[in-house]
Image (cartoon, rainbow, N blue to C red; front, side, top):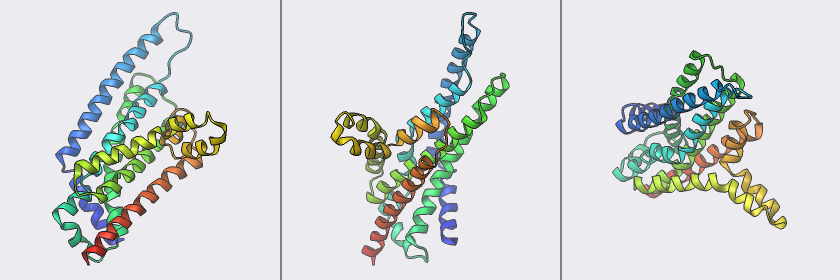
Length: 260
């Protein structure tokens, strides 16, 4: 546990001192801020329309903003994780670190938790949008907002864990980022592929299995759209993180074995 904490503190410190990480955060928050402003202005005009039959709730703004944030994670997650293990391998420091009294699991978990912490920091910054909605008299549903943010937090952890695998596989950060992005896109498109496969009755069980692997099936279609927190969706994200971290640990352990 002490080793995990040491790795976590080191990597978290590097994240919060990294100009690249702050540049990503600034660009993302700026983009979401512009989007938020335009949506507020548009919804305000719709609600002021004397012919409007129903007012547009502020929940739709939160859904849109957080939905776009999670959709962009196929780019953000690989950028945050690409250096974590590949840089250590390229510079030869990973072999030195692995000679220290720590397990591969602690080493990988510390790296992952640091990236997840930085993502959590960025996600929490978007709470300012809820504050602004409250300031102008729009009250988003508290339960729905909680479900959306919980899902976005778990979603971020899952895609970071997926991307981390490729940082352990290759020493090239660009290749690691590209493969991580491609893997996330595959998981995003699994729901659409399942829809195509389901048109053939004989492949219905396969379609159901592929759909269960989809990120969208567990977040976009449920947590984000309805705000319903289902145990199966939470379990999916947790198991995906555990599985990916396990694979990454095996890869890092192979490096230690080769070094010896």
